[in-house]
Figure 1: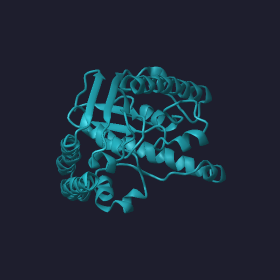
Figure 2 (figure 1 turned 60 degrees about the horizontal axis):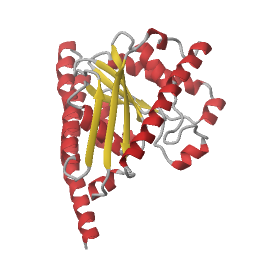
Figure 3 (figure 1 turned 30 degrees about the horizontal axis):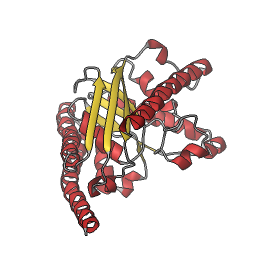
Figure 4 (figure 1 turned 135 degrees about the horizontal axis):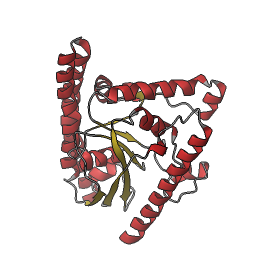
Length: 296
């Protein structure tokens, strides 16, 4: 009987959560489209500022919904953050819930959060996809290594998409999220790529190297975030009430000049940048291991 009650309550909470999400998505879409359609710079700036308020409000509301369940939260951070500055946020990735967790922690601390989205989400999630498109969230096509080997131009397309996105990011203070593992962590994925880490997949450095180079004058630092769940959680499991301790560690790292360079043309820089990210990922893996042992 209790399991049925938890199932019903979880479904009801998700239904309630979808109502403000859809409303805010529609409002963002309306103001975002108006900003795109009116060819007057002052109007564009005003309307887009209004439109960008809704993702921030969504993050705050998501945080309130995440507080409904009895999960325990531990948030520990280093560095003074501002909603008026630009940041590159890199994090490990385990679940769709990660996006809501990041929204809960950072929506009131940093500038509006944006992230690169898979192009198919534009159609799979019509309201969310279209509203994000109207707000200049970048949509990318995920090409497999095999496809890129057959058509090297595909890699060039991804680079140009990232550079164009960075030009849009310059318009307003933005926090760019990049899950550098490229996909959600699973044991199967870890084994298939022979990851040297216990709790992480191999990090991919190309995307963030471009962002750092293109936004070197705007970025106030790199926000290194580590998310840990004491028990594996999904969006559904969270609202159904499966208990977990959610720990979020973050640190604001400076942006040294040696991380700025031509990633795809300079082989030595590419090796250096990947080595830097690998070392950061090794520290993150050790932290996740420490957090796991501390809970148990």
